[in-house]
Image 1 (cartoon, one colour):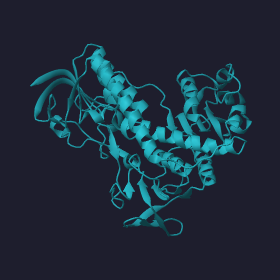
Image 2 (image 1 turned 45 degrees about the horizontal axis):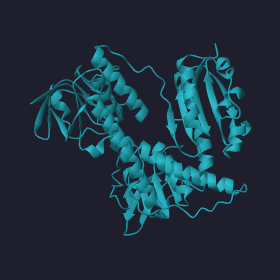
Image 3 (image 1 turned 90 degrees about the vertical axis):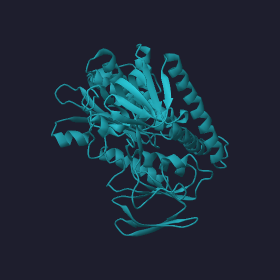
Image 4 (image 1 turned 120 degrees about the vertical axis):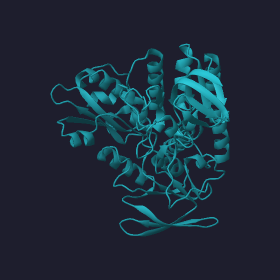
Length: 448
């Protein structure tokens, strides 16, 4: 039986970040995952990195069309998705190799196999028993599957199978209007695929403010994306080369398409862990219950990343992994006090942080709201991307920045400036009074 000071289950962003922090501090650390190919987790293998690589191609296609209309002689002949898929595999292999090298250099021991708890100090991994003083569970999430849309990997797919496509479909129905649905609608529509989105709620990105959602909706409609709001799939008929859907919407619609993408969100992945053997509690939704220091119901066992009920982003997972490791190393109970930016790499991009108008209204808080539009921003016009706006939520008493929302050019980059302002409790006067390079997207702040 092997003994370790800390065992980390899951080699995704939160897991490998935890392992690196622990090993660098001299803690004897074991990192467990199913296989070497799983290093990097969902983010690297079927999420953030893969998706954003695909979206980079979509952005180029959109820009090529714009600049082609401005005198640049470009000819778009379409997309060789096989070549894109191969390039994405090469990119993932390169990044995975880099992570594996960092783990090796830090002295992290790796073990491949499926882990399950024997009790609160022992794990079973491929018939081997591991004893630990501390443990961090970082097993991530998996695609949520609807009973009416069972994923077969051929005609009904999840985000994972998008990266296995050998040809673009002529038409696709995307079920879900959240981050995943909006990003893939952007990708497929950029290359001429007929896209229909079936959205259960009354707006795209249901957690965001209505004005952001409306701006994204307008942009999508200009791209000829068909969006059905307050809609659901009521009937599915899968054929050899087509899928026939009945949609409950304002009026019942029947749609035929080549592919259906189920993009209805993700759920925590804890399959086979046998958490009950360690006395670890889960919520009704399957999330592992933790306190503010990321401790489970067993104080020496922590959980971080997508398997707990926090923001489902890789950047959140990295932060939680670092904090949990710090708490193990020091014996303290540090919490995540940082502002988490929310980012959607759609076209246009959407990014938010801090307090929203929707949340302020729910809490009954008095706020001031300032808006500036990209129509007046020189760099946005140069980029051919001057739709959208920036919105700042302020404290009416002292003008301190409480929240921010952006829909438009470079939103996912400039949101960090607003996150820093909120963390440092800057006023809008202080923020707008900085010197901004010209012409840049960031200087839109001067117009608030």
